[in-house]
Image 1 (tube, helix red, strand yellow):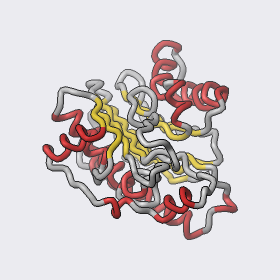
Image 2 (cartoon, helix red, strand yellow):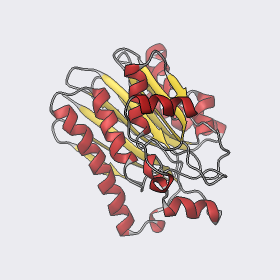
Image 3 (cartoon, one colour):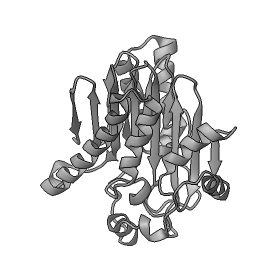
Length: 294
């Protein structure tokens, strides 16, 4: 058995604001990410490899606020963040403050695999990326017109911009990964929940794998991803009840909008959100699954 679930970010969009063409493009992007992850799992690959490949597919698509489609800071720059976690070993890799790394999730994976550390930032992280031979891109690569328009014209930010993936592989192991370009107009140096293990990303074979999306500051204050795990481990809640408690009770009580995707070793999937919509999808080894927006 294997299962993968992904998200392309929580948004404040309504159905009337999304054209048929835009909806099709979002769904195609989600399907491409599911395909990338499922190809790994189908061939007996690890959950860790599957979530990395799913995230790379989303980072390479400028429709999503991660990698190529990253939001702009108040200084009109891009700052990228990502994290990945292995549910079997509890090993993790995280990065933030990146400017020109093509795939932040690949660097996070390298931190996990090839360093003694968990979290690298800024110039040090990029130096490590060069040593690992990871690809860089010029500033122009990360220019997404929609993201730039949101900044320059002070448009209401529709994206709570994150992409994420959780997976269960045929060996019974879980993994989670999250990547983001941050918030439109954020102060340079701001770090959200996505790269913070326990806040936006968490995985443990004993409980679940979680990737969050939404108002990052609230996710950090709630330690949202780990809170789901704790409610399962210490309170005996089911996956769905634990996720619901965090998203619809604890997060909402603080005024936070967003959602999460979660998965356990039984193959159960939860994709709750309290925002207007959350781009999401899942698929299992039987070919069951779907992509959804609202």
